[in-house]
Image 1: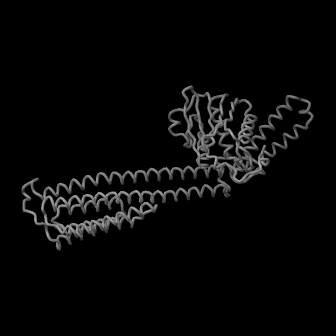
Image 2: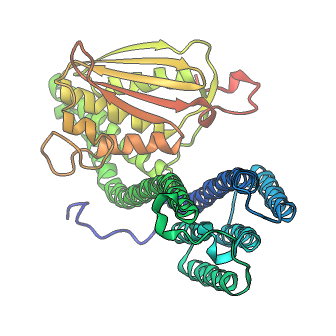
Image 3: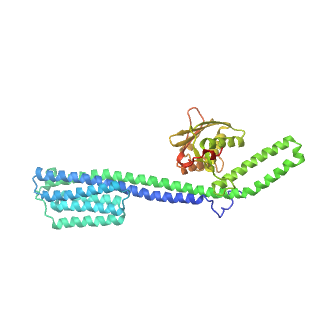
Length: 461
């Protein structure tokens, strides 16, 4: 039975909980993203309230001194001062808090409605053309709040409008509604319409931008969670296949050992050389199986050990050269001052995947340069192959994104990207102007460095 068609093993590899924790972290990030959106929306309401304060001051001054309309200006300025104080407090809370709930946004809009109602009551009630500013509050609520809060806000504003019509004293304006734009009421209504339209277009556009950013981040988180789940399933399959391969590999090792001692092989140099080559490749297979099980937390006796960047990379390159004897690798280490790290089989397998893909695409020659940029370990792989196709570059790092045309192709670079991302790094691909392909891996040294190491003699040499 093919390993891919075999049933999933019932036991999970030890690294599966770590992936599940990452899925939980994605959900936590989703919640944090909602909190950040709420914070941005609260800031928009604070900015809108500053505009309201400035607009009310200008309107009151113009109506009282410019048009000579009798208004209780002192009481209106007191109400305006209350609104100003509330906005200062809101701004201070916004600077010290990272989350704002729907209830807080609802209360903030209710304060705006209350202050608007107070000002309208003191300046003509329902006969004041600026009474249509209630629509601004309801519209913003419809965009920012959940339906129960929106309908509550609608009921409150409708009640306030009805109360103004029943209890407020109308403005002493001339009955000139039929005079067109020369009518004060028509002019006030036009100003209110323009103000409503401008504020709605400006702030709803910004609110929608916040919502689009939230949706984009959530889509990215869901995609990442799906990819992590895909990796878990692949890890389960790989672990099961590695367990199944252990027994036949051990049997082959015993048979080859017996062959090496048989007279027919010891007397024939060519046959003995073939047996040696088979043992080398068998050992490589056992190393691959050990690496799979080690990555799955089921080590076959190997364990992570203290080493250094230079030692780790040099031994890795030597091992790859030894097991891929027909490939030419030009290796340059420009890392600089060495530093202690923990050897990681996942990083090793990631580098092997990139090298194997490069050799398969370009044939023989490839170049690996190791350097340090700030706090990052930078691995740059270059080959002389045909380069990446535009479609491959556009979907780089996605599963089954391959131009090799075989089933299962494209998983190598997919795993490379996800291992690097797990460590907090990144992988980029490009086609250099001189031809070939280039893959660059940046890994934060903080994720690899061995802390509190003072005895350098304990490093793996």
